[in-house]
Image (cartoon, rainbow, N blue to C red; front, side, top):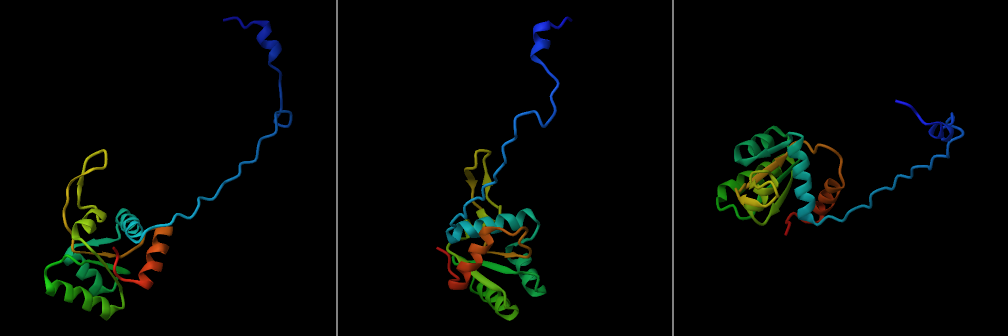
Length: 158
C-alpha cells in the first residue's frame, strides 16, 4: 500500500499543547426528583431487594422484627387476618420499628418483586404480599429520604 504525499502533507506531528484546548466538562447535578409516597416506597423496596435486604411474607418479616434487624416494616391494609395485623404491629411497637401501611397487598407484592412481568414491563400475574420488612436499605438514595420524611408525618400511604 502506498500513501499519497497529499495525505502526508496534511498530517503533522503535534503535541498535546498544540492541539485545540479541551473544553472543561461541567457535571450537572441531577435535579432532586419529587417522589410521591408510593413511588418513594417502591424505589426503596426495590433497592433493598437488589441488595438482599428485604424480608417478604409473614415468616421472614416476623423473624426480622423479632431479631431487631428490620429498619422499616410495611403492612397491607387489605390483609384480612386480624391476628396477623396484631402480631406485626405489636412487634413493631416492641422494637420501636417504623410501620407503614399500604392500601393493597397486590401493590406491595408488585413492589417486592413477586408479580410476574413480561419483558416489556407489563404485569402478567399479581401475587399479593401482606408484609415486608426492610433489613438493609442498600444505597443512600433520595427515595429513602423522601420515604422517611413522609413516614414521620403519616403512616398510611395512599
